Length: 620
Image 1 (tube, one colour):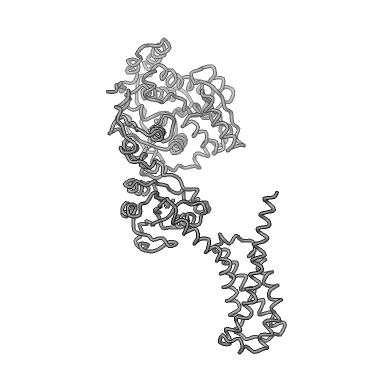
Image 2 (cartoon, rainbow, N blue to C red):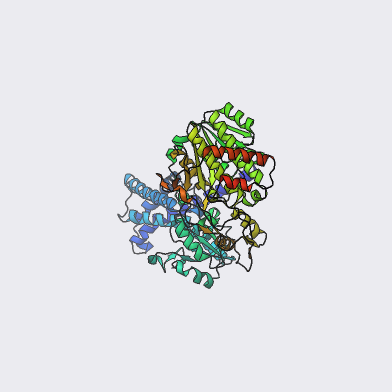
């Protein structure tokens, strides 16, 4: 309460000061026009005109204060005043001038015709000067203070976003930055100034001027730039030792949300060299709307993002099944918080438990199942192959069988590019899963499909979180091989395409997501080190550890014999189902089941019988 009263007193004091200033402004504006009209000689002003001005002054002061109050000239924070406040001042002064003209005519006070023009002009000048002088002095003080600050900054982008960032940094009481120069690719802007800061050239000048001014931090203020442009600029910036930061999307500029606090560090996602993938949201909405949707492995990286996006598309009910309670709890609380209207069911269960999965489907009767539950970590599965087969292969088999028995309309398997010509247990197990769902699709009414994609940035077990931890620990950053490449996609992108593929599914397809151009892991490591503000091999070293068991230099998305068909979305393709002997396949599955349940010492030969393209690979 004491603080509230203190703030009210401060506001009252400011308003009293402004009112006193405006009274003086009206007095000056009432006499100065006559002084100007008669050649700046007060003694030459006729007494009749002076009497008119003095006699009307009290009325003029009262009317002006009322008008200024109506136009909120006593409510604004003038240290942050802008064009809106300036427009209010102009409108208020014009109205005051018109009322002065009317008042003097009604009271029949004689006055020169030029008086009204000079009166309005002087009143406007004094009012603007008085109110904006505080802001000008404040900005000048901040600029002088900023010159002493330690962080030297280069701004890339001389558009609206760049101007906003410069204004924020210059005017902020808490800024520790000094803006030294601006970079922009538009030659027409070169040599010109924004708020007193020079635009020194295009992106080819970044390295030169970063060295010339001793730049510590580069801010990329081009929120509308596509990924290719960002990749190009970031690669040039990485030739310096400067820290990089960038702005969020352009929609936040439109909403007026951009300020210094919105700056974020440049993420490795900016280096993928492509724009974010967009999908047909309406088709997805119609697909899951009013349906009961079940997601197995719903607490994992892919599963949880599936749940987020499905929750936003108005399902009748969302059922999350996961064996790991902590993950299940986290996504449950997030969805309750963000979608309080959602009919949400979260269950702890293993897809390896036949009775439990059957019971869940009998109770909730899902229309669509997204099967994301799986063991995915390649090296760990190489050391525990029986567990990989139990969970991935037979967990999928049991879930598919339960789906058939309970009338599920569509079953979508989340697969992987490692299923193509697999060299590891995880990839081979996923290939068997694809064969299971193709077999079930041919024999039952449920539509079974698989969606295959590569690595997702930021997922559990992804290389990016590992690199970040290693950098935070001071290095070294470990890369298995200098030439290893991977296809990358963000988790939301992958899940959006999975949902869209489900819309296209007619049954039996293996959908292959276009992951864009492959990325060299070594380049990712180097760029992440630079983006963290360190120098490669000086501050943070990179060590090559050799390929791990089952790891390939590159991943394939499509088996040679599958062929490729396009869909309405150019980023989603369909691989032709591979023909195989179904009765023999079932016999092989039963043999494999017996082997893993008896903890067979080496299950790989049995897997090779089922997946002829599986060639186990050992690390060197």
